[in-house]
Length: 142
Image (cartoon, rainbow, N blue to C red; front, side):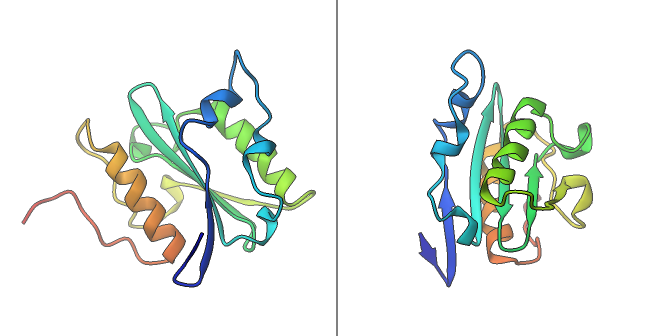
């Protein structure tokens, strides 16, 4: 999909769970053949009770593991997905040296303080990361 000059591919939200046990489907089949030419590859992820996000930027060699509750743990909770996504990045750019980031590494990244708005954070993170805009949204109402 081209939007405002950005070439982005979004993995269907229903696909990543098939990468895990018991199915162990090949995550590489989820991406287009020209993935290495895209500005961003977006993988929205659902872990029971929570949405998280992975954004790969092949042209910049960056992979962002974004969890709106990053302040409560190690930056990105779903470790099985992290392992698969790292392998997927190596498929996109074989032998590539990817720089990894979590919410703990991104200055000003808004964090989720309540328990039911992680999906909104996932969508907002996607928009701001792809558009390379400074994070200026908040959950605080004025």
